[in-house]
Image (cartoon, rainbow, N blue to C red):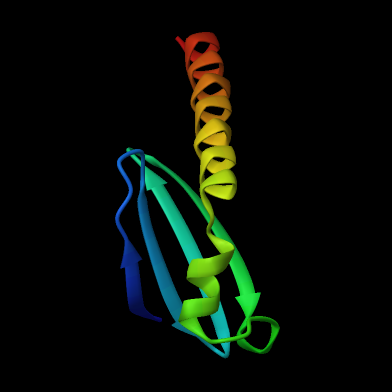
Length: 81
């Protein structure tokens, strides 16, 4: 797996990888991460097509999911203590 691009964003780290004819889009925020996999044949224009897919609406929904993930984890952690 190799990094082919990074997309700067203030709310999370966005990396695009290439592996086995797939693009892997990884979002990281602290200890949390989300990954999305796409076949390279499903994207027109290669990595530039991936950039088009990652519009601000999509990214803002990913950030909202991070909030939900963090809340779920913290609730589980509180039950653990």
